[in-house]
Amino acid sequence: MLDLSTRAPATIARVEQPRYNPVAQALHWITAILVLAVLPLAWIAVSLPASPAKGFYFQLHKSVGITILAIVALRILWRAWHPAPPEVYVPRGLAVLGRINHWLLYLVFLLMPISGFVMSAAAGNTTQYFFLFPIPPFMEKNKAVQDLADQIHLAGQYAVYALVALHVAATAWHLIARRDALLDRMLPRQDV
Image (cartoon, rainbow, N blue to C red; front, top):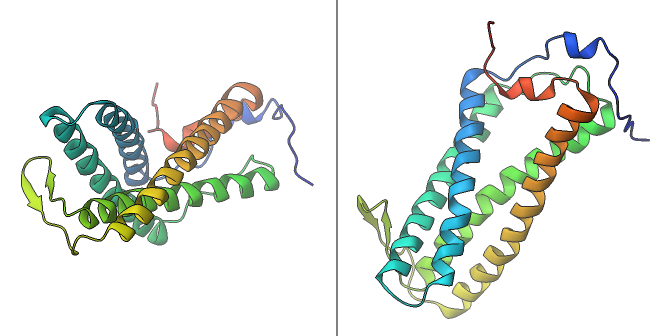
């Protein structure tokens, strides 16, 4: 049975949580910033009529998406060699749920840029990576593949919303209700 107690013992707030290393922390916050950027770029792009502005926003969206793919792949590799610190003050059931959410986030943050890139390539589109260099399509135009990638990308969008909302809500719950300093694990040490 999951221990969902709303309060951590009073002593937990005074004991420092084991932290992620600085590289893992930086990769986490870079990913968060990129996700916060990629979503509105897509919303703006799809809301515009066919125009150079629409293309501009889609190119930025695709560039940020490809960057997310690279950063998340790097995060997974880094995590393989630098495991997460132990979750000292988190009930076992909650720790398992947290790990499931993290791995689902990794999965969806890989799936979204891959499906978007496949969708773009299957439509015959070249991606201008931040307008620095072109990434040509790696396949011939294929409407069936484009449609499948589009469906995956659309479903993945809702998975992103749900998983990020759960991640943020769990963080807020740890911060406000449990007061267990779990957020400190992903923040640089403060020597005050």
